[in-house]
Length: 439
Image (cartoon, rainbow, N blue to C red; front, side, top):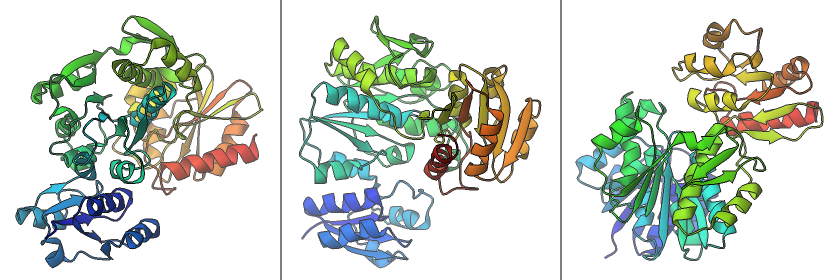
């Protein structure tokens, strides 16, 4: 009799995990308390996988031998508590996929509070440009399970991994793991304790062996204490942020790589490049191949994305910057007079660290949010502070106040859910209005 696999959540990771489970001989049932996505429900129908939406059938779920839950479902959810109390193991889709990955494949795992997507994409690009058989996914694009189901086996898998995905791992062991940084984010899932959030990130190296590699930011404030709390057997390499030279060059193992011809803007992207280049070197990519590939890399949208215009000003879409740390690096990268567009759903932000990187640069702050009082209080002494409630109006105001040679930076430091569906919607609207009004 086939083992029973239950999937909680019928999204990208859930549908892909279900299809992988069926391929591997499980009897699969998918349960989604919401309405589900028609795209993924259609996949389940086509695969002949039974599912339900709108509720959880406890009697059916509790027949499972193993449960895979969506990373968006917290451990505190009632259905998860019920499953665990019944003694049924609950894992993530990452863990399930790992159990069926080709044994001779190399896994690269990338986590951190900021920069995961850029580093994952850049690592993939450096490896692919060097001729490696490599796919990227995880928290970015296709889930790990989908990479296994819909593609031929690869030599290398580069995975972006969130803390939520790592929380559900048991035996997952990347050959090369990175923790880019740890700054306060998603603390509502961790009892508002940074230490618990940091420990979640360190799960990426929990199963590693001495022959594996764990790359860490040389950071005494958060990384070092977390490393002391978490036993790691892997070979550890500390990445020195000072080798991100002015955001225009990086130094890895004594060799300098130029970023001037690369679209990677700012010191934070230089730090992302430090990790990606170090991974590529560990996997045998030459210095010459890396330099060439750095210059042809195309970053993901909404991450310091320069919008092409012909008005003599530089318009930058950094909508993905939903916390203070991300916006800090974006402002630091501004090398001229700047109009800064910020605001949204505040996460309990402390805006004080931004002071040192905006003074002397930002002459106008456009508050784009439903409630801007905290921003206005923090930055009320900026030469000009104005408010609006739409991306269109933000672009109109920025166009009015920005002179030739200015930078217009959308880097909100806040979530987007007060006025937009998500950060993608916010960035898409901003870009569209820039192209309509300015370009």
